[in-house]
Length: 127
Picture (cartoon, rainbow, N blue to C red):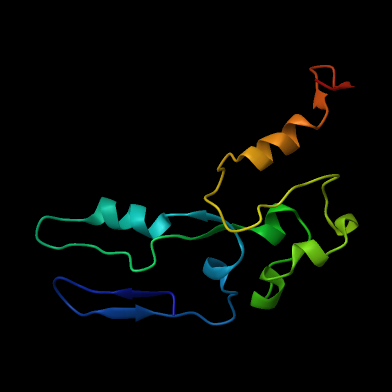
């Protein structure tokens, strides 16, 4: 099931799909997509609710580029048990738990502060 749509006028509808991985529940950065949509669609005579306000916005396996997103099983790959050489990135840090997309944490900021910075002429320098 993708969604349950309740109509103010007309017929309620359940939307389903086949052969699509369950992206919403995958580990990774979250976004309050449904809460935002419910707030924007709240009308005076007909409310909108989001029983599941936040969903996975960027699956971890996609963010660190280690797997295709073909199946739900691949979406749940344990990054900590994956060879870092499988990633397209030279270095990365994943949050220890699902966090809002682009959330700045002390741990993440420390990771970035410890890395070289590229200048305009692309020479690496450290701070």
